[in-house]
Length: 80
Image 1 (cartoon, one colour):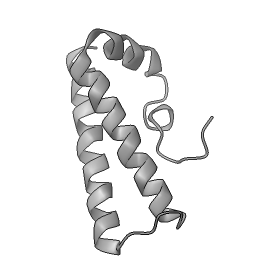
Image 2 (cartoon, rainbow, N blue to C red; image 1 turned 120 degrees about the vertical axis):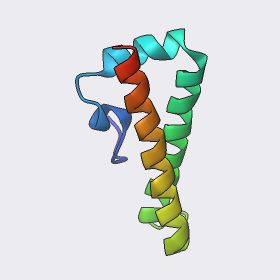
Image 3 (spheres, rainbow, N blue to C red; image 1 turned 90 degrees about the horizontal axis):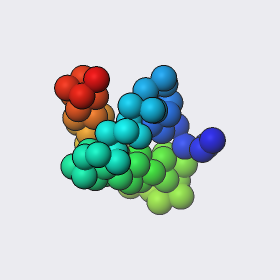
Image 4 (tube, rainbow, N blue to C red; image 1 turned 45 degrees about the vertical axis):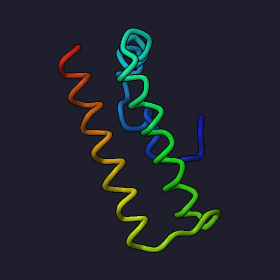
């Protein structure tokens, strides 16, 4: 388990089997998951001052994470 908040397992409890199945069958979805993890890690590093950024940049990263999450939700709904 990661110490980073907002991991996919935290955000989609009970859906990890569906996420894994879609990840291995859909390259676009797999890329989306990688993007989510990268942005989430960047936010975590900013929040913990490991790699600080401006407040505006942190807000933009959070918006980006939310947009990716929305795409994940849509993909799961379409393939559920």
